Amino acid sequence: MTTNQFAECFIDIVADLSRHLSPENRYQRLLRTFRSTFPCDAAALLRLEGNALIPLATDGLAEEAMGRQFTVADHPRLEGILHSRQPTRFPADTPLPDPYDGLIPLAKGNLHVHDCMGCALYIDDIPWGVITLDALEPGTFDALDIPQLSAFIHLAEATVKAAELIQKLEHQVQHEHQIAREMQANVQQSMVGRSPAIKALKKEITTVAASDLTVLVCGETGVGKELVARALHDQSHRRDSPLIYVNCAALPENLVESELFGHVKGAFTGASEARSGKFELAEGGTLFLDEIGEIPLATQTKLLRVLQSGEIQRVGSDKHLTVDVRVVAATNRDLKAEVSSGRFRADLYHRLSVYPIHVPPLRDRERDILLLCGYFLERNSRRMGLPRARLAPECEDILLAYSWPGNVRELEHCISRALLKARGDRHNGQDSILPIVPEHLDISHDQTEFPHDHLGGGNAVEEAVAVVNKQGLTLKAGIDQFQRHWIQQLLAHNEGNQAQTARQLGMNRSNFYRLLKRLQLH
Image (cartoon, rainbow, N blue to C red; front, side, top):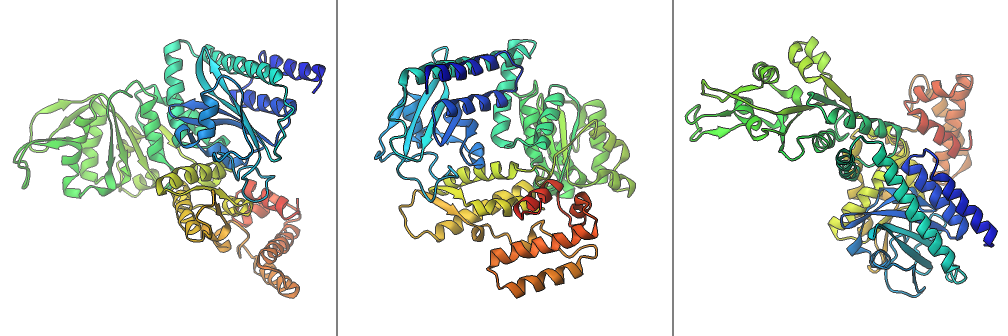
């Protein structure tokens, strides 16, 4: 690169410092300029959080990489980069495993030899993170201008520092900003995702967390309601006090009151000593009542009194105790319908739903599915003592098309099973990457949100099957042709109305549009 070209790239980054950009966009633009200045096949910006490096932006890596966390001690290359104040390049024949092996989509098969280097970023002489460069061809960085690279790294450090200062200015006081940043880091580890739906959820959590309002968390089974409750607690002024969890559905009906409010000695058979209830244990903190719709009606009355007055009464005692507890409740039921049917008190419902939060189902979180896959692959492979795993490209469409009725919990179980099956299929125990293929996912095509016989689509199905049978295609090609013909028939019937066709097929619109593109019908 000529001096003029380098100067132009330099100016572009400096100009971004004066623009109002989100940290995500700022870091992505930085990496884009980095790759155009120092040609490579992939680059990544990772921030050090505790003992792990967290990707903030990637360019050239598979999308699932953004869902991973790289524990420094487990990745000697990243550790070497982080602990050096000079650019670090690794020999092509180094035995050290590369953290991005298998995560460069352009690569064919596992990568064992390529050019890899990186630079540590220091802010005020404190290690902040790293920038890494990967190339598929050995020798790519032979002619790299190290002075230019060092100058760019200093500018990257300035960009990072400017981004953090801008974030600080958006908060009224330094103390509040620090709390928000720490809590955001904690939540991000659990609530992986960048979709509009998850961003809106995080915004809702931040909005209500600082208050003492009672929150009702609603959503389908497996969406992560407990994570929302923990985020609310961690971002509140009660974070240094206990967060007490109660699964209301698991409480025996005759012991619900004792569990919640406590009892005195001799209150009932088996009460050999006095015991504090969950409200007392949560003093000063947060009480999370999961599956609140399962609380018996008799107990609902006493729970309402606590929410109204802050007073509890142990079973068998005439004494009232005052508690300072913030209540967060969760349910996968329609409590309004429960109220209408007489199974839930209307006054308690209104007390609980002072600030309702809806947790979106996984099918509405778009490509968060791939980030979550990366997160679960990394976490579960470490737990199981397995090598790093990588999703085969053909898995992505299957994962994105499936409706995930069990939501995030089902996805994690699916990935756990896939890891075990992939381990069983390994032919070489020394493979550095464990490939996950569609057969390991245990998701059949009739379980996905692909077209199914619905709303008068029977004739289209028969025609599609006939077309496939005549052509003698492979399984994958046959499925694609089946879907293509079926969708064409329904689009013709709906006069080209894609939104109506997506509804008729029971598909999320964004998933439907992606399917059209993959089938070359877009």
